[in-house]
Image (tube, rainbow, N blue to C red; front, side):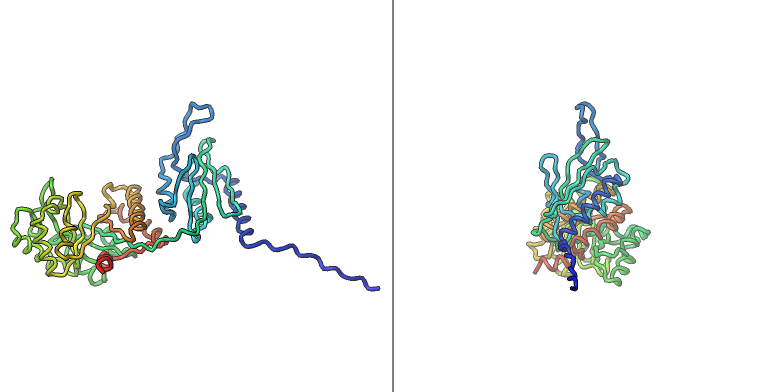
Length: 370
């Protein structure tokens, strides 16, 4: 009698989600064993005996998470727990991989990593053997990367033709170049940018409230009659080839003077130029006056480099992204400095990965005027 062969039962295959959770759990275990550390920037905590305090390195948690593509609006805090919501396309594992490149030089240590079946993940950190707050990464299908537009204007071109200027011209993202008329390199830079189909503006000197007044042939001063203001605008237009718009250099006094602005905008309207109010004064009426005179106009949202330090400029870039995400677009003004260039090179690709689009300011003007 032939013996029947019995087929071995194949255990049911794990779902893709289960296998993913298992993989993440293994990855977290490796992090714990290898003692990776993290930039945390949380407040100092009292030690167990309640007398000695442990000071955490002064790193801004929000800015650190922002730099990995996490919007400030996705971050909240409850007690000692930091909750970080993530869109579906931004998996926590990717954040850990990015963090691992910088955490080795910090003093914090991952004590525990946990992945739940829901997709939530948490990390508990210590610093000098003192437990810090948990960070929870929470998938949120209602979140999506932004498609907001950002226009960055770099002012003060024309003074120099150095490596920083050339690197800004060669930047692989769209920015707008605002050139002061009448300087040594103004025409040369404007013509080069025009041939490259880059966005050119006139950065016209205007009278400030305090400090020295650049009383050159293009400067707009409140003492001038409307005819002289119009004449100087026309000269500036001829002095900067390929320009399509104008923004104020200084001008905290001039941008509060309705007579000066009225004359200037009548001249700009004749040349079909747009205007960006640099907002060097909170009292500026320039944007409102431009609109009144039917000159396409927008306002600067923030200055990138009032403090010429890399860390501060990075914070401004991510603050700019928050404004853009909220309003659909944002404008910032910077200057041709090495630190500003370095931050643009570092942060613009990060924001681009998040979905932000860098555009010429004239494109933004056109879209907002429709």
